[in-house]
Image (cartoon, rainbow, N blue to C red; front, side):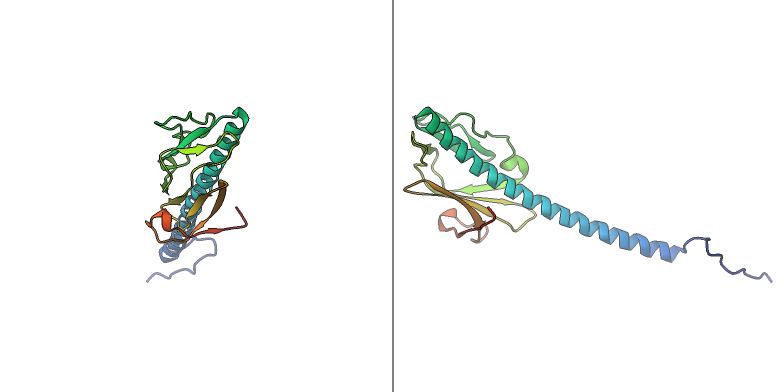
Amino acid sequence: MGRSEPRQAGAGFSLPELLVAVAVLGLLAALALDGGQRSLARMRVETATRRLGWGLEQARQQAQSLGQPCALELGPAGWREPSGGSLPGCGGVLADGDGAGEAAGVALQHNLPAALRFSSNGLVLDGGTVVVSAAGTELRRCLVMSLPLGVVRLGRYTGPLGDDPRSSACRAEETL
């Protein structure tokens, strides 16, 4: 009968050891992928919110520098020139396809009028709330335009998902 020789130190791993190692590596990779997707969704919401706020500031500056009123419209992908109305569009502001909305996987809900108007001295003449959300994260940001001074504030939206932005709970955050 044959004798089995003792296993040498450099002979390698057994099949069960390899399977356990592959399973552990697969689990770690899945956790990293899931965390990365959540982080990416949060960054999309943050970026879209800041772009919307930046677009409002650009429109305000445009109206002020030209000394004449102008208007913006919020489409599914972000700010764009108004499709109708008597006021000219605020040129040089973000347009559809800039990555602020649907194109980036971000959903925009709002109760703004068809055209958001700016006075010749840069004040926002219309008020409302925009809620920014994305699949893959619970984070929802809000952008509130309040009257009569046209103050714009960014915050965290705490209302129920799918709720009408008019009954929003937009909490200010110091980080924004």
